[in-house]
Image (cartoon, rainbow, N blue to C red; front, side, top):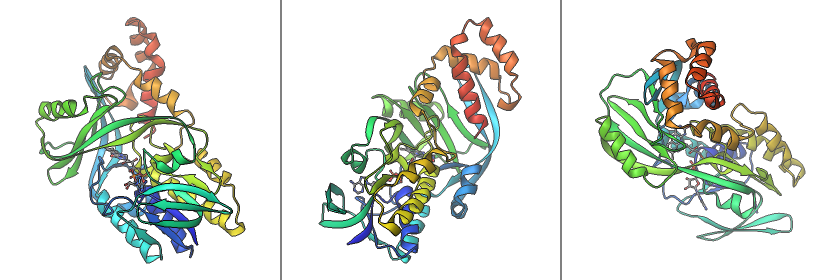
Length: 367
Ligand SMILES: Cc1cc2nc3c(=O)[nH]c(=O)nc-3n(C[C@H](O)[C@H](O)[C@H](O)COP(=O)(O)OP(=O)(O)OC[C@H]3O[C@@H](n4cnc5c(N)ncnc54)[C@H](O)[C@@H]3O)c2cc1C
């Protein structure tokens, strides 16, 4: 009998497992991919604040920038912030090695396909066998089997993203996000990766992702060296993120940022918070993990109504985006006068855009 089964070996699952193993808990990680950290579909971008709080990821910095540029159809603005590109595959391999060194059993090339309560524990069926564990952790990403089996989703909206390794000789100072109606609910991006390379791609709700991806690369003269695609929680409306002797972490719990869709930081931090709650519960064999949800809600990455927040920001039409571009005029977001912006919005008769602009402005300002 195991103490814990962690389903999924992304940053969330590996972060939980490492801590549980360190505390001497009998823990197994089950991952359906053959290799951990091999094919990573990711822009690999982190903010300075995220990197600082994660700590160990500093070892994997490939490139450091000093601003985030927001490009709109009629102009752009920037905000001065430290941003980093990291080697995510190596980071995941290190996390897996550390978990294994702490006695965690790593089972790759094996998918979880069934869960059943049995007395005081879970019976877990995988593509290779069955396991018994006191607690289960759903770290199985945006299409989580565990979350569905536990019946925790009210609504699950997923958005698709591409990450393309490109040759990029442009000497940019930061991450670039491109907003346009062409990228519904999302954006296009270029995150430099150092040594003349970058990760670029589009994040779009809809069917034309690969056409838009190709068009974006063409327009920016970027040559694709390697193309990957994946899903990201756009917003999840959850009944809860925990249940009887179980909880969800990272993308499985829909914890990605509702504007940028960044999810590495929430994955690692929710993993750490989960490990704390699980260890406490295991001491007394408690069935309820409600402290986990409370702690997540008070974390710096949690958005209480991410659906509403998301819909406000991404309800923008090209006219709103053009207006922001005009107001910004290439300047620093933090120097934009709210009074002047307000006047401009009234003049253009787009008062309804105000909450959207304000949220977007604040979101990047808080980055
Ligand atoms: C194109 C793209 C670009 C992105 N760029 C960024 C970025 O620049 N910065 C950032 O912060 N975030 C980015 N993200 C988001 C980030 O990748 C995720 O939020 C993050 O990976 C979430 O980590 P996780 O551990 O929760 O889930 P994942 O990394 O998805 O890991 C889940 C794991 O579970 C496994 N699994 C799934 N089902 C089962 C099963 N039934 N049994 C066993 N194993 C299973 C999967 O194989 C996977 O390895 C990007 C995402 C995409 C798609």
